[in-house]
Image 1 (cartoon, one colour):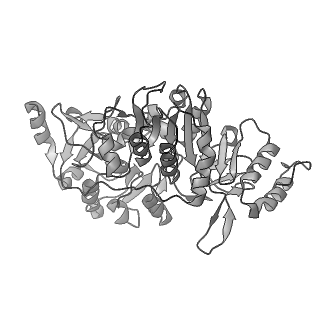
Image 2: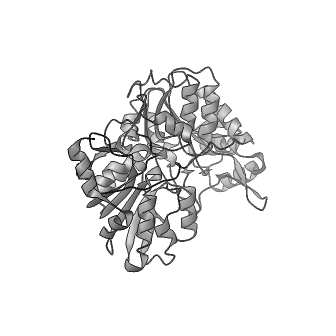
Length: 447
């Protein structure tokens, strides 16, 4: 390391307990995203519970235990809030220990820039390099924008995080930092691909013929990316590209099969672009200082205007339910928060604008609850469910029973098409509901 940077680093080095002393009553504190979660600083902050009041904390997609949230059931001392629920944060919401912040992911940094207060930002980075830079690694998507807005910046060094090359805003310099903490961290959290269900496999079979060689692929969160990634890896497709909010192990499958070259991309040719990464060690090793991968702010990666410039852009995302009007719910069941808007609407919009592009929303036609009762995921209309994608932007909807392109379709056409994708047990009831809602033609065929 350069001598001046090393000395500045030493001058700013503190213990976690010393570092969090800067937090005051009423402050807004930010934890960043996913693997950027500062577990040592969070633990130190939680230990100050009885001396602090009304400290508001923001984070998102955090899978580790958040001690500041867990230690204060009253929420008088610490009030945790998330931009996008992980499974763990969903559980916090269910227990009344977390509130959701509505957003579209590309707008998160502009929200901070123009409207929000950050008194203290604390998040994990790689160790400092010889030039005085810390890499924001797997959490680059919104990290730099939050740090730029903060009154006080604390970096927690996580020795396991991979350094990922970026286009811009993937690093922060020691001169921009107020405090640094060190300490041992466990192995990075592992997110292995889920085992596909028979429905997942059928859905993928419906999508695969729609993808051509040279296409650029975006895959969302859930079991579908792993399935589609493996099936594309085993296909005859060639020269696929990556432009995605989230990079998962599915892209490693494509790379190792020789399918992911990024050679035909019309934006960032030769590089797979992402904003966030989490998966297994296999993924972390692949993205580490890989010249074929670049990480950048979601303000750019998820911008529909950027996505639209990519020819043959294929967007594949999942949802929870669709109603007969083509409204798509991907983040709540009724009023229960499940995940978040994320970048789904961004990619649905951008892929639809792309020359040769297509946007797919996938869902199983039905689900079986813990009591063994089956219910339809295609509903007559939403009753309090949060609408993630408006009906005016619906494109391909895919279930295990087929696919339907809703673009430009009337309400009665949509009803007929969506009912054809529903589980057979519910089709007659859905037809009756469509008739009551005035969106069923009497001359329509019985599905």
